[in-house]
Every structure is written in C-alpha cells, then in structure tokens.
Length: 433
Ligand code: NAP
Ligand code: HSE
Image (cartoon, rainbow, N blue to C red; front, side, top):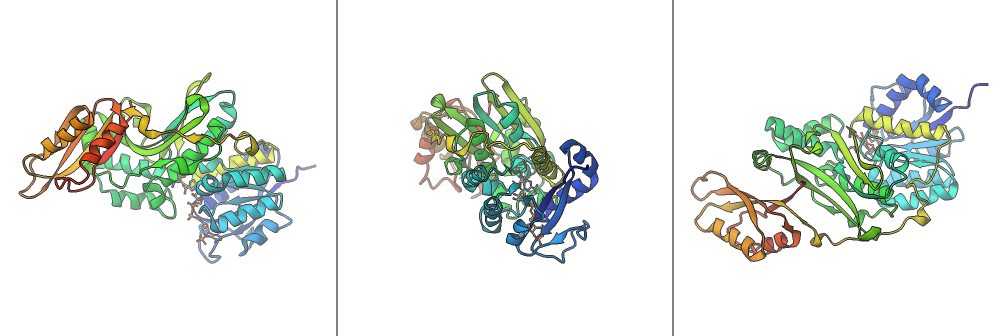
C-alpha cells in the first residue's frame, strides 16, 4: 500500500513560497523516496489571489482566511512564509500549534521574538516546530548544531548571517558601485526582507544570531541582549581604506559563551576581516557560520544565505524530517531546560579597532583627535588622512588602533563628542584577527 502523503498548507507565496512550490514540483519523486512518503501541498494562502506568481496554483485549494487554512482537516503541517515577528504570521503559528499541528517557518523575526513561547506550545502539543530556513538560507546550520555538533559544548558561534548586506559590501568592494544602487539589486534578486531596513540596520542578522546562540549554548533566545550595528554608515571610502590596509568589511554576528557558561555575549556589527581569513572570501549573498566545539574543533558552514531556491531547500528539508517522523525539541533542549544566560559586559572586551572621522579641514584637528586618543590610553597603529579637501571642506581621517580595551576607545570618542572639528559622528569598526 502506498504511504500516506504529508499534507501541507502554504501561507505566503512570495520569494520563498514560490520557491517551495517549484522545488516540490521539480523534485517531488526523489523527495518522496527520501522522506518515505510524498509531500503534497493541499492548500495555499496569500494576500492577493489574482497576482501572477509564475507558478500553477490551480492544483491547490485557496484560503483567504489563515485561521481556516490551519483548521482544514486535510492539512497536517502549516508552512508559514509570510514574515513579520507578530501580526498574521504569529497568529497563524499560535493557531497551528494550538490545533496540535506541526509548523515549519522561515521567519527569524518571529522565532527570535516568540521562539520560546512557540517551542513551548509545540512541545506541549507534541507537534513539530522547525525553522532551518530562518538562519542562513540554504545552509543546514541549525541541523548542524542540533545534530552534528550535539556532542560538544560550543563556546563561540560567529559569521556572516545576512545575504543582503554581504551582497552590498562585496559588490561595492568589487565594483565601486553606490550603496543604494546595490541594495535595489539585492531586493530585485529576492534577498532582502520586505522592509530592507531589517537587513541593512543589522536586525535580521541579530535575529539569526540570537537563534543560533540559543541552540548552540542551550540558552533561552535573548534577542534583546544582542548589540546591533548595521552597514548604513559604511562608505565607499571605508571599503577603500580597509582594502589598502589588507582587509575587507563584512557584517559579522558573533556570540560567545563566557565565564564557564554563565554569561553570553552577542554582537552584530561591520568588522574589518583580514584578506587571509576564510570569511573574507565569502562574497555575494553567501553566508558562512563558524562554530567552535570543545571536541569537534572549528566547524565551518557555508552556502547561499538568501534567495528562493536555497531557502526553499531548507524549508523542504524540514518537511522531509517531519515526514520521516523526526521531531525533537525545536531548540535542541526542551524549553523548560534552556538556561537563561545573563548578558556579558561588552565594555570589558579588548581588540583592535578601525576609527573613521569626517573632520573640518583646518589646522589642529588631527592633533585634537590624537590627543583624545592619548588621554584615553588608545594606542594608534596606523593613520591615513585623505588628500587635502577644497577650502572649507571636510576630510576623512581613518586610523587603526593597537590591541586594547574597547572601553578606552569609547572614552576617546566621548572626549571628542562635543568637538566642533567633527563634521559627523565617528565610525568604529572592530578588527577580526
Ligand atoms: P515575500 O516575497 O514578501 O512574500 C511574502 C508573502 O506573504 C507574499 O506572498 C504575501 O502575499 C504574503 N502575505 C503577506 N501578508 C499576508 C497576510 N496577511 N495573509 C496572507 N499572506 C500574506 O517574502 P519572502 O522573501 O518570501 O519571505 C518570507 C519569509 O521567509 C520571511 O519571514 C523572510 O524573513 C523569510 N526568509 C526569506 C528569505 C529570502 O531570501 N527571501 C530567506 C530566508 C528567510 P502577496 O504575495 O499576495 O502580497
Ligand atoms: N534578507 C535575508 C538576507 C534573507 O538577506 O540574509 C535570508 O534570511
């Protein structure tokens, strides 16, 4: 007798939803063999029924009402591909798990904000909740941490977690093109969030980092603890300065388990990465995640971080797991046993920094900046001042510090805060060595 299909409802028919339909259509037979049974879309929903999506929807029932979509008797699993931390996506997720049905989602914002609640509901209902596509697109990094690295205590997880930012930074570096122009291209390619501010301000990478840290460290999701800075203040001149110094600029998310596993540090910010580092070669919408385990050593996961095909691949991998009967706690450890970790104090950290100032082009300005560095105890390794500006113009001064406390750099900037010589707030990027 043929095995019963796993019957799914698809909510959201945009970039990822369209990709899921195309993937299940193209690879249906091999997926059925690997899953042990067919995976069939039964019903779909989106806002606009009349929109041409380039896929044949006539095979599926259409539901305008998301609550009715979840309630259908012929639906086993709901796949949420709408997006947004709250609103219709969260209502659908709660409804689905409340009905005791499984949920697959690519929605990192929702998991970062409500993951604990939803995982608790899934565990109570004994229903699967899976979100591989929420982190790093097509890379099976959640599976890698939950399963492949499950025997290890992880101490650090870091990497490139946002395809849009990486596409912008690496394209600007390769072509010298303008930020806004490259962002538009990333949107057209389906990499960006519906509101791209989530990408370029670092929030999307922070959502993903908080999810990875929770899984990797056995901690509760602590999105509010992530220090976040995006790429909006990076100029072509910073990329050129970094190149001249032997670095590239990448948006890096980094989580560390500190003080014997009692505290956690999480930060997303653009960093200078030496050209010889494996992350420096990661370009376009590619993502890469490094996880350091106490027995495995350093693990590197790399692949396409955004776009319809790679993200659909991760969504369908979750469905195959469910079809095979693999459930398990969504965050690897049951919610009740996840240990909330306090935030580590970022000010106690040390490192090297790139500092960039846009200053008035007049005598004494450089002396004022270097005096503030001296008074705060910041040691300067190298300094570049752009050629002379037009009279009354502004010039760019960039410097790299020696290794030292981050709080000393913060103190120097505080000393310069009211200075009339600074035309804009300074930019501080950390160096990864
Ligand atoms: P998208 O292209 O904007 O598609 C969103 C879909 O949701 C659209 O089909 C839209 O309907 C539908 N929708 C919006 N509000 C709705 C509502 N109230 N009721 C029913 N349907 C509604 O977004 P996407 O890029 O596919 O992203 C979907 C999710 O995947 C997001 O959580 C995103 O963060 C995540 N994700 C995306 C990528 C990527 O590369 N794009 C990668 C990983 C994860 P209409 O089409 O009718 O407007
Ligand atoms: N907007 C996200 C990115 C999609 O650019 O990485 C993948 O999560």
